[in-house]
Length: 272
Image (cartoon, rainbow, N blue to C red; front, top):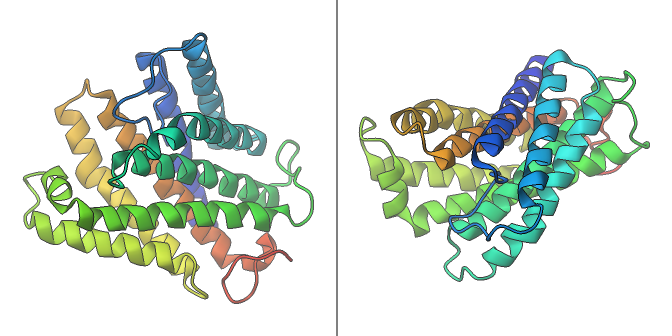
């Protein structure tokens, strides 16, 4: 399972570096940004650039395998702060359970995924700068991250049916059976979200969902972005999907090593 965890970390690292590049190009915080971002406020660009630098540093440290846990925790804090201040107020103005809710849950899923990454380093890498969590915290961090990702997957699955026309049109023309795949992936997302919270299925659910999202990156997000290279939002989708795919793979690794992470034998998360 170390190979799965390592692949997940690399996906997360590439996503963070990608976010940094997009922030520097756009001058705004791009992670889970809504269709109608709030107007510029004093210091917004500086705060956005600072966030991007933290993401870049985290990605590079993950790749070179040095002191990665603390920067990953900083990423989680930054994403949660932006999500709470920007996405949550917008979501409550969306009565249709549409894209504003998607971005809100997406922000917390990525932030929760960063917490899972922190926990993975605290257990598997005891080098200075990584092994700093108090006893028992690893299970708690994974519990939070697992719940937030599960809620995001469930929401996306429901939206696949609520907005099935939009989802079908989102699928590239070279893939046949648009409505079939829209419904099929909606069911898969719902099952993955439920599976993350059901006894004994967390490993298979996280692994399957992680692979599915990575396939979406290859089959959907990258081709669409290449066809419209100037679209910041499209490239942001690449980074978001890759990052969430990565944290799902890291979570799968944790589920296979439950005792080390302070997880119970039944596959549900708990304290030791």
